[in-house]
Length: 221
Image 1 (cartoon, helix red, strand yellow):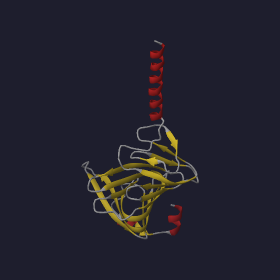
Image 2 (cartoon, rainbow, N blue to C red):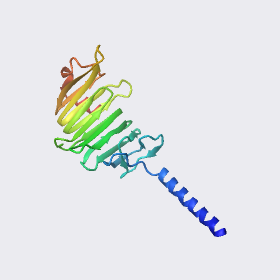
Image 3 (cartoon, one colour):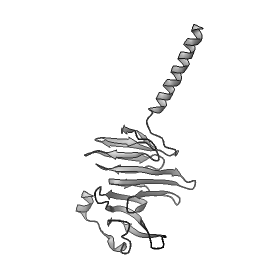
């Protein structure tokens, strides 16, 4: 009888330890099989995994999955590398982003980050025909093609700023017209060009908003 009670205690303890280990495991993997990894960290940042309210301190070699949120502190930055394509994006100080898409579409891979506030510098390798890399902001979605591009969102005004250092970016905005149908508008941003948008309603003169990069704006973006 004593042996059976001892065995029961061991089994219960083992199950409990397994549950605790699973519960506190680092939120590295999302539902997607694709993984992004923190490859450089300056200062401090926190990670919140998809569907969780708990935040974890970021660290080098930490795995990130689809749906994870990354928040950087002042004077901090985080470089993230998408492992299977070696695309990189560096998150600036006082920034909040989420990895909204990290999937394999069969014919290509799709990666998408959502910039809630702050700045992200994307360094994307040349994509094949079926691959996509997108950056979304409150005012637009940028389809990046083999590009080095800065995207920033003003936390107070919501203004989106995009500056392309190499390659091209297709920026798309959408609005609902009086018939409640969605209208989409696109503009191409080439190397050494920039675009600023205050809201998604700025569509009639979208091309006129593309300008040559202002170095001061780029540095402060």
